Each structure stands twice: as structure tokens, then as C-alpha cells.
Image 1 (tube, rainbow, N blue to C red):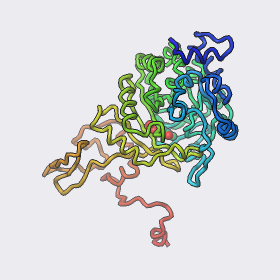
Image 2 (cartoon, protein in one colour):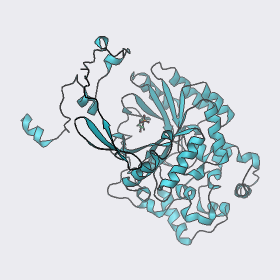
Image 3 (tube, helix red, strand yellow):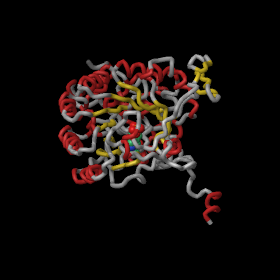
Image 4 (cartoon, rainbow, N blue to C red):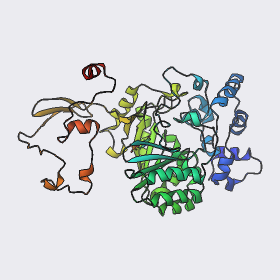
Length: 433
Ligand SMILES: *Cc1c(COP(=O)(O)O)cnc(C)c1O
């Protein structure tokens, strides 16, 4: 069933009928890329000034919106509409702050071969598609948007797969892009088959926004193909409760019914979802549709995003309003993806208020202050990583191969480091001389 607005939009495309609407390829082919078309399709008139700004912005950061996603816009409240704001360019995108960066997460620097970002010890990102059905205005890879809407060929992707094959410690591969679901079923099937053939790859994750902006993409055939490659996990990207339409929820249902665990990554966006009530409604709706809120991202430092950023305090306030107030599995982890490639760093409200040698003082979500009495006699087990001689029956095969790093290393018994010192620390440099 199409809404009135959708029927009207459809009429704007010559010869289009209702079955075109549910065809994802038709949707992609008829993405709205220029401002006059928006006016026609939505039946609105934008000011001369907006027209002028549009041409300036779209030269640097092009626009593309699926007819479906555009059909969710509320034209009576355009300025504040969360759908419109995520898809229509505004002049602030051209503000580049001194602290902005083209590639703040150093995805290109942490790339051993083209198309792979290997940042964490046991997992890697494989970029399989340079194209998206729609260009989110808040894209962290904005630098690349519209570069060339190309699909890497098999040879290029094979290089990435080869790297994963040769890197034993990678047990989790994230397919990203672009949007991997813009590939054909056959092409995706090939990539998944290649990855599944690698013995040390235990799970494959796919990051896609198609359930939100192009739910037509979740076809029975796609789902049938994905099912062959379990364990497959999918993370999608809802930012506002309005995005959970009937077609979108139906797409989620198909994926969940295929046994695919679903997660959601939201970005905290000023003027769109920087509100505890909106976020609570979003996470509750997601869970009702079997999607586990996974991450809430602080908007990062990519160029052209400054108008979307909120203070970190906004995210903490949102978490404060979720933890304890709603089901634990409705609460995402709020993260700042560290500039410079440090990875995602979780930030949380503080619940531990104080502690003594045998008691900790905590507060709960209601503001009740509680004490927790710690054990009087706890015999710490000294850990020398010799699991064969330990009373705790861990005894997994790879336990003794683990190497502790970072804070984990400082906390461990078997490593004698007492501090982590940044390279270039003057005080330590003086000692070396
Ligand atoms: C986010 C990300 C991952 C996955 O991180 P998780 O915390 O496991 O979800 C892996 N590699 C890169 C480069 C990432 O940005």
C-alpha cells in the first residue's frame, strides 16, 4: 500500500506504476539528485537563495535521495523534518572548522591494502561498494561521496580477501562501503562465499542503511542467499523513530526471520535526534522490531558536519535517560570514534561515586545512593597465564597465546610494565640520554 504522498511522487516519473515503487533497482535509478526535481516531486517551492546555495554545496557534496525516503518527508514542517535534514544539503556543510578533517578516523592510514581497514586485533573492515542509494548529509566518509559511484571489481576485492586470508587473527569481517546491499545478490553471494571459505573467519557483519532508506532491497531472494552464509550479523542505521515505517519494519522482519541478528548504529545529530525522548522512542521501537541498539555515535570530526555536532554532554544525558529507565537491551553504547584512528571509545554517565578499602558507593538511575560491601577476604589468583596449572578451568586452547595490551596489560600479573608512556615524552627522553 502506497501513501498518498508516495502515489503523488510516483506520478512525477513518466510511465511509472505501483510495481516500480517496490523494485529497488527502480528506486536507485530514480534517485533524486537535483533541487528542481525535489520541488516537483514534493510539490513545494524553495527560495532563490536555497537554489543558489544548493548549486554551491552539491559541487562539493552531491545529493541523492531515494524516492521512498523522500516520500517520508513532512512538507508542512520542512525546516525541522528529520528526514529532510538527513538528505537535503544546507550551506553549513561548506563551513570547515580548523579542527575538521577529511579522514578523522584515519581509515585510509590504517589500511594495509586498498579497501581494508585493519584497526582492531581480531576484526577488519572490508569496503566492498563505493556507492549508496542515498547520500546521508552526516556521512563520516563524506570525502568520498559521489567520488565515483563504482563497484570495485572482483580483482580489487580479491586483494582484500587475500589480506584477510593471510591474517590469521581476523575472526570477524565487517562488510561496509558504501552500502554492500547495493551490490547484486550474485556478487554479494560470491564475496560471502570467499570469506566463508577462510577458516579463521568466524562471523561476517554487514553494515547497511537499506532497511531505512531503501527497504525494497530486502527481497526474498537476498534473504535466502544471506541465510546460506550464517553466521551473518547485520547492523543498520536508524536515527529517528519516524524512519520505522511499515515497509521498513517489514524489511527488518524478513531479516530477523532469517535468523540474522540485527543491530543499529545511530549518530547523534543536532536538530534531528538530540533529545532523550526521541531517542527513547527510537530504541524502544527498534527493539519491538527485533533490532538491538548497538552504538550511539558522537558525530565525528569529518569536514562538513559541524552543524550536526552536539556537545558530548548531550549523549551522556540521553544515556542517563535510558539506563535503568528502559530495558537493558534498549540501551546502546555511546561512543566517540577517536580522531587519529584510536577506535571507538565508550563514554558513560558515572555510577561509581566513591570507594574505600572494603566498600564502594554507587548511585542508581533514580539518584538513590547505595553502598556495596566488598568481600573481606578475597584471595586473588596470581595469573602467570599458565592455564594448565590454574584452579579455574579456563583451559581453552588459545588462552596461552593471548597477549595483553594497553590498560589490560597494566592490570595483569604476568606483565611487569607499570606505566604506558606516550612516545616523545620529554621526561622519559631525558632519561634515555
Ligand atoms: C567500528 C569498527 C570496527 C568494529 O568495531 P566493533 O566495536 O567490534 O563493532 C572494526 N573496524 C573498524 C575500522 C571500525 O571502525
